[in-house]
Image (cartoon, rainbow over all chains, first blue to last red; front, side, top):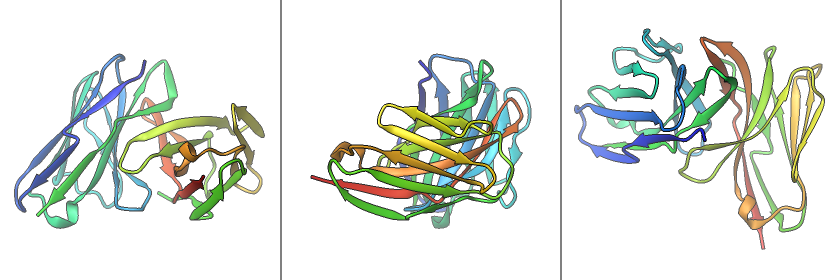
Length: 116
Length: 113
């Protein structure tokens, strides 16, 4: 159990376009979701925390108007990178938590975004 | 958030040897977790140790935690080529309905045949 999928697995887009990344829990209900960003050969940096039905909480330095997070249901969260620029190129990873196991995060396989 | 430090940054060993990675952190924690990441992939949870625990084992993995020194170590015994990956420690604190993780800088382990 505890399978998390992300779509797409990789995306290439032109500068100025918006990209939506989906994160789905396939076999459990996720009460909390986290979005991380990872630059090459670096660690994961938490971008935001979202709870189903409420607004996301963003980490310091992360622009909420640029990285739109929607957690509309217990199985789906989306991250939209608006007006993407080359510096937004990164590996984006979501993770999910279920109420029954609050200390464990189940990670998606990640989405590689390249902005030209 | 204050990111933890891991050392070494990179480690190269021969198959069959043991690999030890260390992690230091800065704030009080509820728990500390270790994750593995193969290149370009998501993270796989390895082991969680709570703040009131000192040592934990899981298969070939042994984790220690010293809260007085704010440090943890991960030992992989009898390493295999398939253990080649990046290893991250992460400290947990409550956030919303879940456990907010702050990741360390990671150790890149290479196990050679």
